[in-house]
Amino acid sequence: MTEVKEDIKPLEPEKKEEVVTPDTVGVVGEEGGEDKKKKNKKKKKKKNNNIKKIELFYPDGVYPEGEWMDYHQDFNLERTTDAEKRYLARDMENQSHWNEVRKGAEIHRRVRKNLQNKLKPGMLLTEIADIIENATRKFTGAEDLTKMEDPTSAGIGFPTGLSLNHCAAHYTPNTGDKTVLKYEDVMKVDIGVQVGGNIIDSAWTVSFDPQYDNLLAAVKDATYTGIKEAGIDVRLTDIGEAIQEVMESYEVEIKGETYQVKPCRNLCGHSIAPYTIHAGKSVPIVKNGDQTKMEEGEHFAIETFGTTGRGYVVSGGEVSHYARMPTPGMPQPNLGSSKQLLKVIDDHFGTLPWCRRYLDRLGQDKYLFALNNLVKNGYVQDYPPLNDVIGSYTAQYEHTILLHPHKKEVVSKGDDY
Image (cartoon, rainbow, N blue to C red; front, side, top):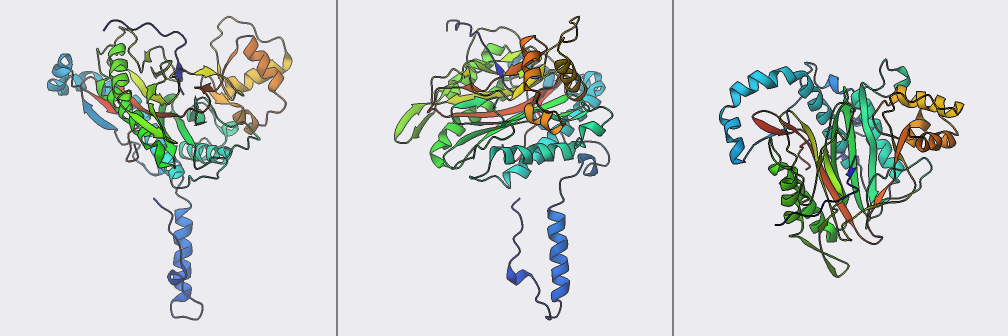
């Protein structure tokens, strides 16, 4: 889920599915024909049953590490050379936490691979969201929140973002949405997985038309530049400056017109804390003068957005994303329906973001008046879609990283991006 910076500081000076064909299936009466049929049926059954609780794939409970990267800055060299001592002294005590994050990352990789094998033009966005979210629920063992002792212990980290074209973020279909993914669309797929409240936030952009290739390349390059520059004691503005320089070096030709790729300057990466998708620090994608430093042990989402538009997003459109606000000391809502809905939200989502489809799935009905009442009175925050100018195209890439004492771990990295 994306962080929006409302106020921008002025710059300081300078696997495909197996196809069964007639020749692979035995004919009745042929020698061995029935046996071949049975084998092929078993194969197909096995193929279609590969989404299971993730623990079944890792019975020892230890999950794969992400991609390790050295801190390349001069002031961080000592951390690499003195890695073993520092790692043993500090990182070992975080192994349970890191392992939960890696578990979430492995689920994320499997969820997106499952989608990538099926994704094609002509699909409803609701169908795409269901593929993502049902796989996430199955891998995490959170298929029915009403039967879980703690519904917030594992599952979806935030609503699945399926934002098209000029819409950069915070769009997921509400129930009844008939939007279809078209060949000429540019779609941002932003997926969240959480284990023990530890959130993996990672995104990529889907396009079928090659004319958008350079837009996607610019944003991917910018994201990996941000990942490279991130590290302990690094100033956030320096990361933003590096991202901006790379992204603005790209041009893209769409429908015969050439555009410089611009960063969406009021969208940011962010720090992540348990059950908190935006934990306080913002990682800019332009130079903004923020002298705040990254610190050892922190958990960040490095994400960048590039656009052919003006490079600034505004809120607009039907709301789908919501999150519970911290309201210590506030009384319960006066409206009975709002009080009941707030209890459902607290019991099933806690402080994790959610969308209206998730309430529908829990059997909630005719809740919009109560929901709007909770938003109006500050119990719940709504997050409308974020849009650049109509007719523009936006792209996004994002990874979750961990800042270990000796190196950084790009924990969500996969073979796909």
